[in-house]
Length: 440
Image 1 (spheres, rainbow, N blue to C red):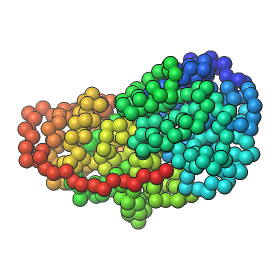
Image 2 (cartoon, helix red, strand yellow):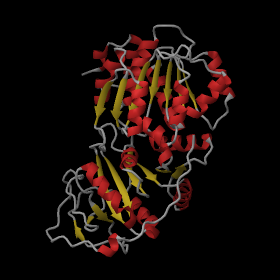
Image 3 (cartoon, helix red, strand yellow):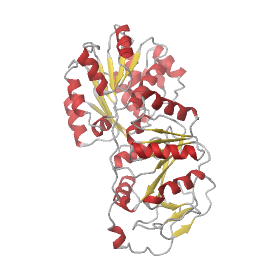
Image 4 (spheres, rainbow, N blue to C red):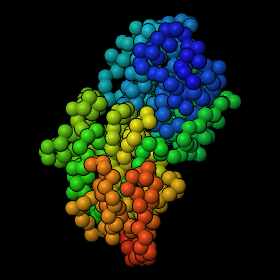
């Protein structure tokens, strides 16, 4: 299938060509015809599958007919970074159409946004909090709205935005086309979909499973030795961009600063930064000025950098859904990528949960020359020929060694009998960690 099979308006088709799009992704192939037919759509697709274009192109096609200068399409996103990313996609794909789009979010002055709205825009991409501010101040008119998109709905639920979404829905025309996109489908989002969608068409791509282009590995380590292990891993990553995830914004800030002092081109992305500094960190990472970006989960879905080669979970995420979202930053657009996770004793329940999601246990590895008291016996692997892949594979924690996830490269099972799990180790207390503050 090619994009010309959708029969877009010539001005939209010109934007597709200028953007270099050739073959639609699966979510685009399935969703675009349904959106163009005027159906409500529930799209289940993880990040990096091309879902932004799946709704942006039909919106541009529709809005070319009709009045200008009125807000006719509204896209609601959970984070500032994602709002900017979606807005950039509209500008790129709609560059030949003359349609105007605007991103609205907090953390920056509201007056420039008011001025742009007064000048007239057809498409608004907004975060819930600032959008409600505009509605309260009557600086935005949504009475002519034709299309509503709720993007990353599960993330909005995770960040506590569902009450705001419901407040927003009460302010919108009931006669509209609504699209809801989510990487996962918890019960709360299913309930929301029943409230906002009318006879929806459902499209689903690789739901609840990480991208097949990503290989996974766990690195057992004591909590106090995490930074030393991270540095050992980074020595083996000599190209590409590296995204490091931490549990809290304070740890992200400290870790980013430490890497900078050690000579790495690094930056951090966390809630305490001003919008200008957040944007500078993102722009620098995209442009290659920073090789390493240390971020919290709040920023995970706003990062759209195609050349991310490695995602390193410095802290294990709290849910399997969060793991999917984190590693969705690598292995994008059919490129291969690596997802490394530092594993402490407290993380073993999540290790088992991830094995269920992946359909097999995740391979445990060690870095040559690095030792930690928690590491157990390791079997030496053949050379894989890739400098970025450490060459030892670990057993331990009661999980068999996984031969998958490496596409066969150096993934061999030891023929030794499995050792029984030490019950005193399995029962060790979890390490407490403070929660990360959220940013709007």
